[in-house]
Length: 202
Ligand SMILES: [Mg+2]
Ligand SMILES: [Zn+2]
Image (tube, rainbow, N blue to C red; front, side, top):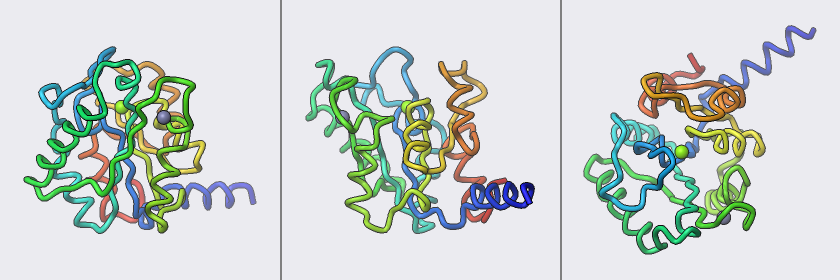
């Protein structure tokens, strides 16, 4: 009996055919994460390989692609809301040139302990669930490169994918993050190639 229950729950966890909403972290998923520093401008935004095509494929599959990003650098005065919007305008233009788009972008501009939206807290996801009434924890997946992304997914009951490039030194807490994820992938491109079109995680 126990074995059957375990088999059923893992069947459900690995079934990707119902994923309609793909939540993406930004730094470390779309662009290179700068350890100990902040991406404050378009000049510092270095695309990771294959991201544009991966997003375009998600778009073509009919899934919604939603960015959720902590931007504590705003609270620290390193850049402004206007700077962030300018960067994201460049990002959208760049993606559009690759026939790719983000369906929404949500950001938290706050410092630690000042809000309900800094991941791993749920505020950004709650905004998205409000704006996209068809989105639920069970038809969404969170793709991120940090423990806070995996914790956010876990708290909401969403499945999470941990992005960890084996060619890069592991992020702090990578083991804990990977333990909360249902699977790890080397990149967004790797995740999309392996997940898209397959009904089950391979
Ligand atoms: Mg990140
Ligand atoms: Zn916030």
